[in-house]
Length: 366
Ligand SMILES: NC(=O)C1=CN([C@@H]2O[C@H](COP(=O)(O)OP(=O)(O)OC[C@H]3O[C@@H](n4cnc5c(N)ncnc54)[C@H](OP(=O)(O)O)[C@@H]3O)[C@@H](O)[C@H]2O)C=CC1
Ligand SMILES: O=C1OC[C@@H](O)[C@H](O)[C@H]1O
Image (cartoon, rainbow, N blue to C red):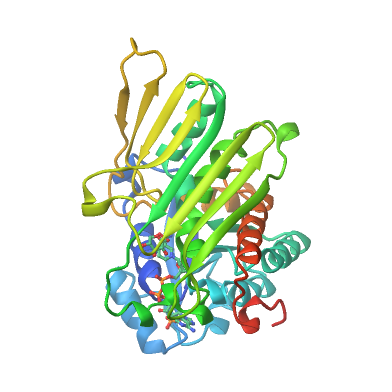
C-alpha cells in the first residue's frame, strides 16, 4: 500500500540571503536526505522591493511558475499558500508575522523570533487564539545531530549534565561591515540576537528541553555585553543561565572567532558527571561530536553526522509540514513557551548592558 505524501505549499516572505538558502533546500528531493513523509512546494514568494525581484528569485531557486508578488500583503492573501516563511531582518519579524497571522496563515519565522519577548508573546497569543500554527525557525534544533544529542543527554550517556558552555563567534573582517544588517540598530543588529541565539539554543535544548515537564523551571539569567563603537549594537556578549541543577554559559561575538583559521574547533561543551560531549563548530550547523568519558581507560568516541545535501534547512520545514498535517499548533522540538524564555534571557542581558534598540522596532504597536 503506498501512502500519499502530505504536500505543504509555501509562501516565501522576502527574497534575501537566507530566503534563497531555505527555499532551495525546500526543493531538494527528499530521497537525497533519506526520504521524508512530507513534500514541499513553493507556491509563491513576495519581495517588498518589487515584483520583478520576486520573479527573479523564483526563477533562480527553480520555481519559475510560482506566484510572484511585489508586496507581502498580496502573499499572505494567496489562497494557494498553506504556510508562510518569514525571512526579513529580525527588526521586521513582529510586523511580518502579525501580517501573516492576521491573514489566518500558519507561519514560521526566522530566528530570532522578534526583537524582544513582549513582541513574541503577542504573536504567540494571537496564534493560540486563532488556532494557527506558529514556530520559530531555529533550524539547528531540527538537525539530526541535535536530536541525537538530546537523546544521549536524556539517556544519561555522560551522567547528569551540570553545565553547557557554548559559543558562536564570527569575527567580521569585512570592510563593509558598517553597512551590514549585523551592526545596524534599525534592523536589530548585534551579536546577541543574530549569533547569540545559537549558543543559547544549545544551552536551552540541553539543560531545559531535555528535562521532564515537571522539572522545567525558567533559569535566573545574568550577563554582560560590550558595544560596537560605531553603531552602538552589541559586539560581544556573555549570557549565564542558572537552572535549578545546572548552569549554561552562552557567548557570541563579531570581533573574535570560535574557530580562527577554520582549523576545526569545539563550539559546545556538554558537561556531565561522567564525562563531556564536545560538539564541533559552528554551533548553528555542527556535523560531528566527541564523547569524552571521565574514565581515562575508556576511549573518546567521535561521531560524524554530515548534512547529506544542501544546507540542512529542510528538516525544520519537514517538522512544520508534519505539524500542519497532524493539526498541531506548535512544534514539540521548539515549543513557543521556550522561544519566549529565550527571548526573555536576551532581554535581560540587553537590560543589564543598557542596550535598547530604537523605539520603532522595540515597540509592540503596529
Ligand atoms: N537560519 C539561518 O541560518 C540564518 C538566519 N538568518 C536570519 O534571517 C533573517 C534575514 O537575514 P538575511 O537573509 O541574511 O538578510 P538579507 O538582508 O539578506 O535579506 C533580508 C530581506 O528582507 C527584506 N526586507 C524587508 N524589509 C527590509 C529592510 N527594511 N531592510 C532590509 N531588508 C528588508 C528584503 O527582501 P525583499 O526586498 O524581497 O522584501 C531583504 O532582501 C534575519 O532575521 C537573520 O537572523 C540569517 C542568516 C542565516
Ligand atoms: O543565523 C545566522 O547564522 C549564520 C551567520 O552567518 C548569520 O549571520 C546568522 O544570521
